[in-house]
Image (cartoon, rainbow, N blue to C red; front, side, top):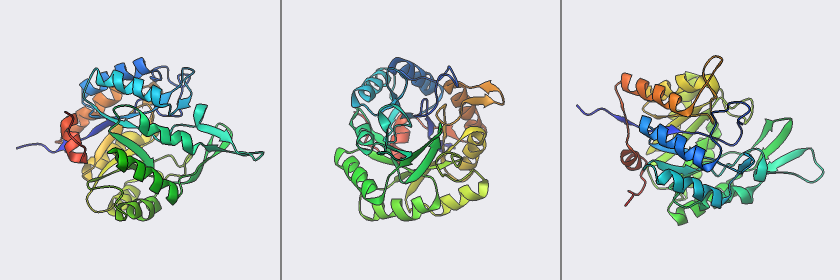
Length: 297
């Protein structure tokens, strides 16, 4: 009997954490590529790529994304998913006039789709004030911007990963864009939980995750990203609900209480549990088929 296949995504870097918090965090192209290759060998089939400048602060610079993507592709066939969220420092933010709040630069976010080799891009269907490092940072992704970004991705043949943080993101913005023909089925939706202290997301509970899943658009494939200690139980819950899983230092810096993680240890543990639950990690080729991506030549 063939075991059901589960996509394991690794999110190795993100746009917030620093080496001061966990020295195992890969931030430069060679570090990221080497770490991703280890995670691929451990069973990951998709990588959520964030770029960093030479000073480790956030960027969506296409040249840096291209460098990362090339170095990864030289080592393995993992699916490349570049961020259009960027991060909370570096090139990505600016203070708005003389006001007390900052904003993530929209024009910088759009550059995330320009890296060579990108197959997917995150599309955050949310506008929110994010609180971080004493700053209030506006993440302005109103419907017109969601429509713009989804249209640009479609023109380039890049699959959106719809990142949703609450029920309204699903039933309003994502459903509206799908109805307008800006994404073809299957629709890949990443349900983000546990960023309620920073980005206005819902906390992780089994009931809240069930509600989010119940309201997904037809013909959706879903993945769950949960932050910190919620990462592992949310991943197991996702499996029980028919979804896919994600781990990585972007979402969780610790392996257990007081023990700093590495990306490969997080992937290895999750792959063990996926198999214990009666599933099998998908290969990159199988992941592309599940998500409706074009096969690689």
